[in-house]
Image (cartoon, rainbow, N blue to C red; front, side):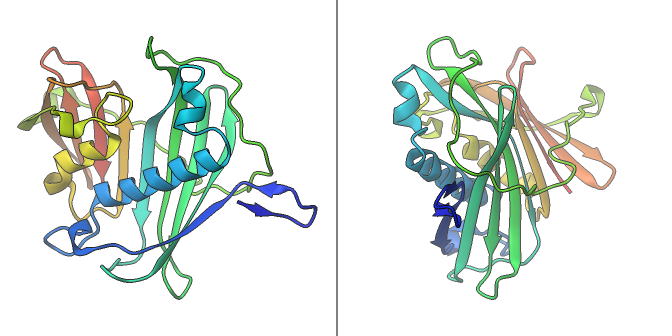
Length: 240
């Protein structure tokens, strides 16, 4: 959080970071789940700093839920190297909140850029609620991607079953549903080597659910879909 010349709050959070060997796949590529963990952690810290964190919202039985996320890797990232993360929210539209992420290397070059869409739901009913949640300060007028996060189109007839995942307690977060980063872990082997990664979170998965994983090959892209046995779509992920 910074201040401009008028001593007003500028809505930005910065943090230095380093990745370890465990953050990279067998080919030395940064894991999608590792980047998602970093994005999630800085979003949590910034929200806490601005007074709209998990504990603040839970006073009104509300929680943040991530709907969509996209990132692009521009430079090969390395374990042990020093990076700087910058994140800031953008003005909300209706019930949708936006947050962007920028990771720079030691020379100041942009290594990874990401964007995300969030909403606020009632912890008990699990439904989206219009609320008084807002960020107090000056927004940075900058978009990570001019085209935002595209809707992923699925052709059910082209899907091929590639595996399944049984949800355990290790997959759950404090909101009692599968942590967003765990979905990236489920499909990491299929989607490794990503340079442009998009994931849409469609429905919550809970303890004991079995998520069936399907793959679809599209022109220049790979799509992975997670569904319950009844066909309910849990998430969609795409890499190109």
